[in-house]
Length: 144
Image (cartoon, rainbow, N blue to C red; front, side, top):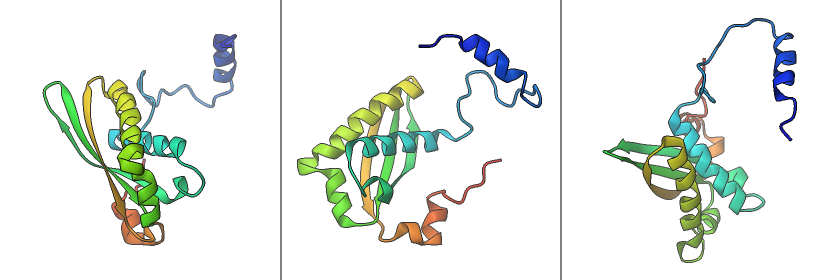
């Protein structure tokens, strides 16, 4: 209901150990924009698929090109089985088209510009079990 937000904030502040401002106003994550974009696409896949599909998928931004008033973004959707690839692409490409449309809208809002979004689905068998792929896909990054 958004009642008493100011009072709650003031109450929480008095119990915090310090008053150091770690991030600038307007900052909502310490992750790179590529990570945020990949997670937006992944979220749409989660929302539109069921059961084991979300647990076997990751997304990686392969390229972002800033042009005059728009962005061109390529995202790879990585799955570990060809059957999942077929599910994500969908009948006549309908599922991947819908994933792209929903993702593009949110990414445009995030970046404040028009976005041309290309999604590619790749099968990498057992990618979650191979250290090489985990490193290449950025799962071993340390954020300080």
